[in-house]
Image 1 (cartoon, helix red, strand yellow):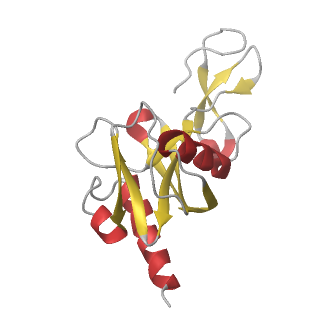
Image 2: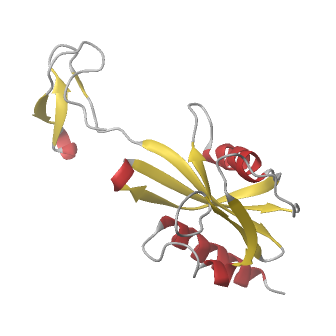
Length: 165
């Protein structure tokens, strides 16, 4: 989101040079800059027995669990909450694998991998279908590179390969 008017006083913002940041929207009345804002979302690969849960939410490709991080919530907690809400699974040990800008929607996606022992899904009304898939196969089912889902799954596959006995 780009600010053109000050969210505090409503005055029109002007561009002002602010150190290394360059030109930024600035409110002369409040004496403060207003940087572009974006929402933060999680994108989680849920792993069980070397398989990953893929879900479909009205798109052509399969995807991963995703959702917005609420104010005051850690990304790891948001991932566990969204996994429970969307798939009905209790997950644990969320691990950050990367962050991915999604400019088309002004989002920052926080990629995580979490583990579960659960097998059966209890889908939310937002989810049309879900399935367990080997990670390598999942890479062929999500949007191709440079998609965030592909990147998270690639990190998931690398992590599973390092864990091989």
